[in-house]
Image (cartoon, rainbow, N blue to C red):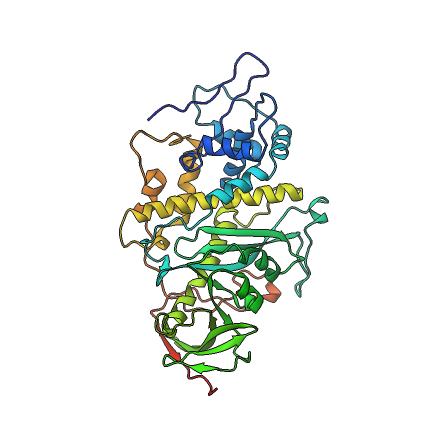
Length: 448
């Protein structure tokens, strides 16, 4: 493997060292890409520094893999594997100034470049009848309780006394098959999810089907997107039938948009008993021959993949921690760095599973990829690609060697697993796994 070529410190006090890398993930975000991002956003340093802009970008990305550490400790891990290279030893204050100098623009540029499904047309589990399956939903993230952050991010109240920390809202469009991020918007929680959805929906491409939560069931949102949608509405919502189809679905109007409505009863039978639920789904796929009602009901279950993606970002990567940044610009910079790092990990996982035909990408273990990537940074391993192209790499080989079992049927309703207070717990959580049988009955629509 070629040696890692990095500028080293010279006797001149103005010369700088550049230990910027991301371990094996550097092959997905190489030096040339980061340099181009810095140049395009006009963030190239104006003079020779110990902390060039390229190095700061890698530091921000590496910081997302070590959220429990301060940036000074993250720096120590970046340089720990660079044996024989005389690197700088910046103070925490110098690292803070460097991050402010670079700003958010290079990270946002990298995210716009790297976002996408990270899968080919033939990849298992990513498409349904030729349509890329995606999910749309929002979440909140906790930011540092500083005076600067409080000028933008607020502490919302609730029945449990409200949040002790300010929050930001993030809305993400995820590819259900690979759980990669297709797009994202973020801002204060003073604006609701539907407000952010309007900013995001116009960017959705044709050839895509979006599975939003029922909070997004608005006709203006449907009209704004260039893709098809499939979402849930309340069973009490009045959607008078205009035309009935043989598969049990019917045409109706949602505002000014013609939609197809499916009402189904879903029953789950386990050794503990039988549980049923009534679902009403609305879609812009109007051809009942090409898109049968029973398959659409089954497809909607994939919306839960976005919940898994949020779990990986907020729990596996961040470990439930508060974001480090103490200014609104720093918060935006950190979130985009987090999205880029998550996208890199997911891309490596999708590339690895694609080398084995028939393997569903959801069998790749995210924690395996995350911890292997951390090790590669500490050892500065795999930074430069070998002359022989390795599509799998060390991270991918670890993922393939530790594939998860096939996905189990989800049998439990969504509940709060960790209550805010012991006085507000919603009962015990049954974590046992049961063999389950699911049946779907399409209910006849009312007469026009």
